[in-house]
Image (cartoon, rainbow, N blue to C red; front, side):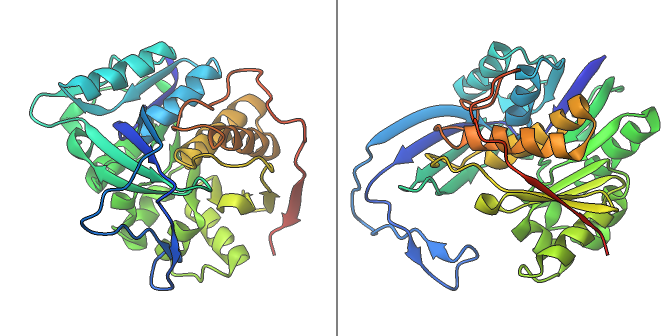
Length: 326
């Protein structure tokens, strides 16, 4: 039996960093900023880095480095990118027996444009990662935890995986991707209601629930109520808030500078689940989650900074506030 099986996307990531990538404030942008590029021009790139990414592989590496018996279910092409993904997983001790090799589609690719403060714009080619179907999965997933990231919007598959896991007594953590969230709250509510953990960022939670982005307490509470167990809302440099139905728990972030924020969300989510497994309490889970995500943003790529068992890169112990749900 595995301790954790992760499910979702796998990509070949190419990072480009340039002094000529200059964000511009734009109120019409969903993030408040745009990254304008002059059409017809050539821009110099100072750094070019090849890595692997995708929610399923990023989270799997966290679990494996924390010495949990881990497998990853993802789709890759029969190409050099797919080979790189598999080799990266194997290097960290993740079982690749469930990695699906698609001979018709290329491995998913992400071109990541990184600006000076570590923020980025990502150009995504879904490729094989966006083509999941139920036939890709073994008849029985024997694991203590099932961690489901993006399935390319395949709600039928998501529902089937969650239902089967709960029938077997497997704990379920959901880190939904954009494709799933587009289905809306009416469709996702009954699925989330079976999950032990649901993790979204603040923008995603606001869009899904229809609650104002600025009403953080109500937003976190409503997100919590969507899950059978714990709801978590991450908020970038402002940290994260978890809720178990009885209390809100909030933690900030470390003060280290960000080189690249790619993979921070996956690092937080997988760190949180590891913390629940190891410490069996939300406070310990939040602490490990923030340590893992803060370490990841100190490096290029989603995997280089992922913590190994016993590794503690930050001296400061962040305070965690606890507030009764009204």
